[in-house]
Image 1 (tube, rainbow, N blue to C red):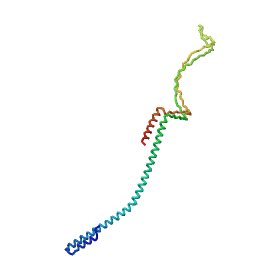
Image 2 (image 1 turned 180 degrees about the horizontal axis):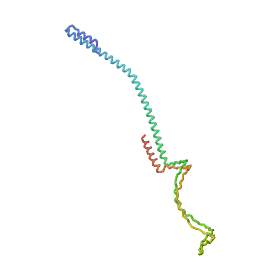
Image 3 (image 1 turned 90 degrees about the vertical axis):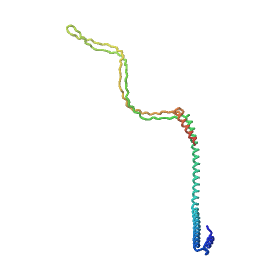
Image 4 (image 1 turned 120 degrees about the horizontal axis):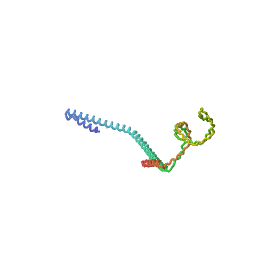
Length: 222
């Protein structure tokens, strides 16, 4: 800021009655302009200083709050990362144990009792087409009076002849049997079926090997 004593000396010099009147007026105007500029500059500096002080007073609590929030955020992130690392290690161990269990499962056998308790309806038609030969061994007894007509020339005379004979019969009689037999019924089925599953058999071992490899690959990703 310009020195006020120096400004006063300049005014006194410009008011010196030696120069002419116009020169004096110009000097006064220049002096007034200089004084106004100096005053405005001083006020601007004071205003700037007050503004800076007010801004600084407002910024200090906000800065402190931001620092506290940043500290809390860093603490939360640190706790989160520590928990994530702990969970990752635990998960990796569990996957390793599961892979070992899958590998050992190929030596195991699973035994399961499957219980069946239900009513099964049956509706079928059974065609029967058979030829059966029936042997016949028997004796036929004939006891009968037979009238035999005799022509005597004078007429026909019926001569009664009593028969008492036994005729043996020994033969085979073929019989063709063709028929459709319908069957409609229900069967109550109650039983327990033991089932044994060998996990080392090819159809299961291939699947277990692929599962074991997938678990090992997953473990390597942690």
